[in-house]
Image (tube, rainbow, N blue to C red):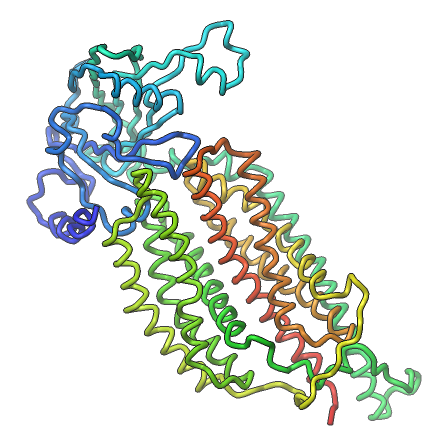
Length: 598
């Protein structure tokens, strides 16, 4: 695997040479030109991450496996778990291959039989690539008699007879000199038993189609699923929630500021019929402590900085994916995320550095290190743990040492310098405190509150409505990631993201107002955690999705599923927490800017 990664640049240079034998990179061919069919991976259908090298199963080819050509992949393809090896099939553009042309012949040993039977009974699938078009097929099938038709799948999986497909029929459609569509039909199931001689064969048929080359990937997109009416309804429902919450926040602002405006009007002699006494209870009483720096300031500023980075990164990625077709390229999404994350580290450094200086902090270097390293090191630790599991299983999900070093170098040589630059710029441009009230030297005592007004309860309830605004979209995202679907409706995602921003800010403002009205000035951490609790509900939903919506099983897939969901929830929590804190910061400064204090 490391050698594959090191040779990626060499493969790219070869692709640019004008006299290339097979024109895979321009996707144009002449009649009789060789078209390479690549085999990629194999694994149980119900466990998407549990994939292995195609030839880990006892499949034969036209030549020994060690002599087959490898396609050296780029970093994104390796991180995605791809390993393209030549199939050895004789494919020539517009040249049909006779029916049942022999690929190879092999005699099954007991070990080969056991491996193939295990693969068939666990619904193993495999993936090929022809002209960068993915092709999927099943290894075999399990027979069932009429008596077994009503049996449970688990019982049938053990009692039925395992058969392996030995014939592959390729139907290729072209438009001029380009390949547009490839269909694979698996045929001729054969019983598996030690000593049986298997003959693997294939057929290639060519036909013409009117489909344009730019539309050839459309057949892989599930329009009926992603553009279902429930998807539109969820957007409408979330939009109505935005209107409702915006109205509530507007009423709160009007109520809190009304008496201040009345005070100024009375002083000018414009209003005489209002109450002469102003209410000096509630949120106004804590004006001398509301802008006090929160505890664990270094950590808090680092989390806000990282969250700001994720807010910017997700927005840029959604806009970029909307304008392009990232789903068509192997590893394109992963590489785009890596580059975008590294570049937006500038935002993290800027926000954390500025916030830390405004809060009166002195250990800015520690804050900068936290901002740069805390989130990536957590993700790296989880990834290395998953890598250990993948290496133990000899899975393609294992990331080679060279790839890990490449990612670390991107972080060291690009992300870290940008974080340092952002911190310096933030401290110099936005480091001056703009709090409208002075902070008292002695902290005010926080009065006892009813149970429902305590920060822990507000934090738990703060994520309910933001989660309600996105959980339908979470279903579509989870299904595309865990059930072999290409997610392409980034316009929907952009709308949901905007709705999430508004709902999170509005809900957190309500929570903060409720907290301040009970004379509790500890709003920074409360606002951050109450909006970040959205991630906890998403993780709970992932538990439901795992046990109810999928058929995943085994230690390997379970560890990968919940580790990925933990990473996703952590990032979502930082993102939502930062949105909530940013909205509340503006709200608090706005309402206290009208308070005349000593």
